[in-house]
Image 1 (cartoon, helix red, strand yellow):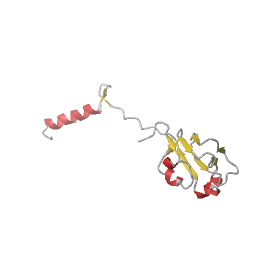
Image 2 (image 1 turned 30 degrees about the vertical axis):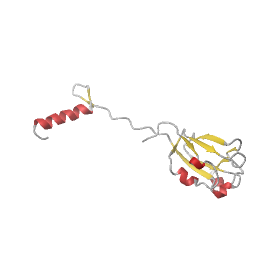
Image 3 (image 1 turned 135 degrees about the vertical axis):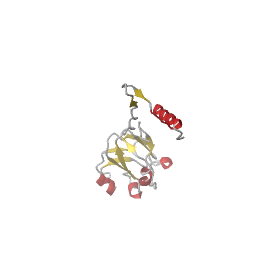
Image 4 (image 1 turned 180 degrees about the vertical axis):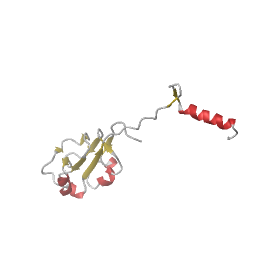
Amino acid sequence: MFPTSAEKYRVGGDQMWAAGVDYTAWSEKYHFHVGDWLDFIYQKGMYDVVEVNSTAYDTCSGDDPIANWSKGHNYVFELNETKTYYFICSRGFCYQGMKLKVVVEPLTSPSPAPEPAKTSDGGWISHNAIWFGLLAWAVAFGLV
């Protein structure tokens, strides 16, 4: 099934944004698309959410963040581009695995339904009519 509208994901599921959660395993369960939302729910005053580049993600550095959210107890982030996003907790918990890499794919739409076949006079005939015609022919010739 192809997504046709945005989804909202609670980062970490029931464990939320906290130390000791395997965010790699969590993110691998999903396919993220442009327009989806990540909901980071975390313990106020203890954790933060920092968007970083890939180098800062690998080294757990929040020194030069793209964005930083530390107020309140949650942050909702829209995935608005086809790219890889990187998030860490800059309060030392990144070293315990509190980091998330999200690969965002374009939003795809399902393939259009095939067009019905044209009749010899230019009109349209449904696929069911074709099948019923073939069935009647097979019965008439004793093939069924």
